[in-house]
Image 1: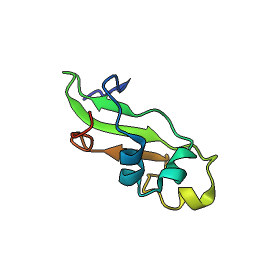
Image 2: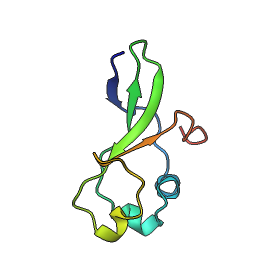
Image 3: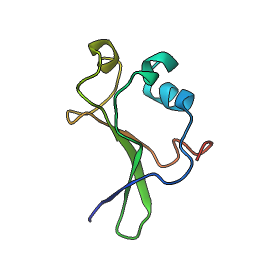
Image 4: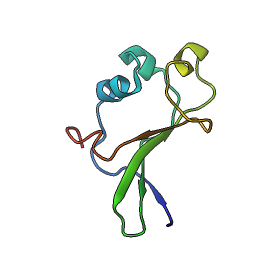
Length: 85
């Protein structure tokens, strides 16, 4: 299976919603250095997951709060933003 990576073109979730999902305060999220919200889709174009990439150039106190993998990626289920996208 091949995965396509695209930037979300639908309405983005609010900063407050993103902060909440990441376990950050609004102020911490406002200072977070990360990629835009992106999607992973299958070959048929069906949404599998959303994700963001976190820069290593963030304060250690913020990085410690994030549940990211060893590549500094955080994944969200397809319905994570259902009420905002």
